[in-house]
Image 1 (cartoon, rainbow, N blue to C red):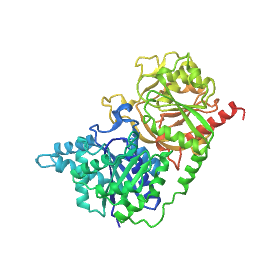
Image 2 (cartoon, one colour):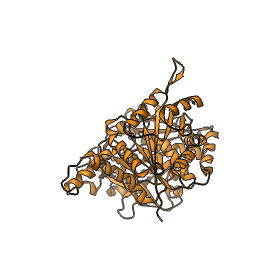
Image 3 (spheres, rainbow, N blue to C red):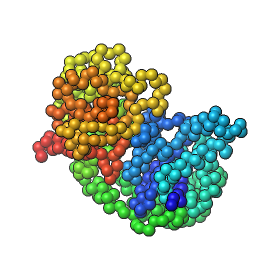
Image 4 (cartoon, one colour):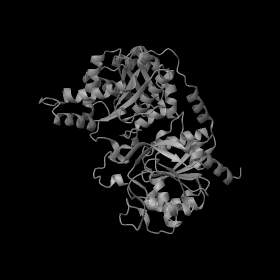
Length: 542
């Protein structure tokens, strides 16, 4: 018998970047740890079809699901917290909604009727909400609405929430509203007026919040919580505070201490009978809080100024370091600023280097300079996607003696295109959603370092790229000491490059960071950090 899915909507007010994604992920974690089955999804109000063509400075990291959808970075939080796999159904943009409706109109599905925001756009949004429950037989679906109440872009989503709440009833649908409670230092007061106005604005859209989450830098006392409840028509037991904690992974515990999950279960009559089973999670936090020794990792990329540009890599490094009993110090190095005359000063104190993924020629020469330094000094080095391609170019130039070696992405007429456009990409003009995307099989050589890290020769990893290693150079690479240790079993595309004579020098065409979670940290990151710790110990004479 199919379950009756409960729907939880998380909206935001006052300002953006309050942490709706972390709160939504934390609640999902708590409910799943109680034995319920559920998932999270994100609605983004921008008109882009997906974030795949957005500059990271605009949007942060573009996350890729296993089924090949370019998604919002909050899906990374959902996977890392809930230890689940998301799909294209977990992320929907305004552009995607309108595109679907317009395509249906072109086909005549609406029988000549005038196509309008209500009911056609809102019906499509509601269909996207419910589609997840039909695909997964879930107890609950948590839907995060991007932006803030009052944004023009968010209005169709909020209207859809209002309709769903009316259609499904309070026992099957609830709204959690996240607002900001600022502290004015000059007045030495916490101010609830922004929250009151935000809730009132939500009410003007026909939606009464069932729960409030108050984002604050300091803990709130019960009198203030009672005041907020009184002015917003929300029960005091449903007013939760989200104050600053040392790690985002402590947020579920903070919310559980305030009985947020119990309140949600009570309001929706969810069939949860046990307390949250969080032993593995607590084990991770216990290790995280006890580590004192450091491992210093350089992250080389062209978007390092933006903290969300490499979010999944950051989190994978943090997770792997904790399990190696270290706290990671990530040193962000702008690849454009690396030159022959300063590379040693930038990298000499590092215990390991990650060369980040990306697109375009900006900063490439800096990455190549850094990779030569790492290779020649046997510094543990991890190249991801474009990072692996740069490893190939640097090796071809400085080991094979091919000074013009390059990628045709950067120089279409180079004499030695060791990285070239995939055959399947050569006739494509549009950029959005046309790359090699999603999870693909890879076969590893049994005695390779990668296979030892995975504990397996057959793996499946997520991709996001157009260019590939040029097979014409494979023999020369192998003869010069490189190992092309991982290949797709169907296309024979090179997926992993290693230098066996180095302590740890691996490049992957795929993105291992996407599949690293708190409870299942990616084996390549664990292996990389383990070697970086060992290297640090050798330097310090331990």
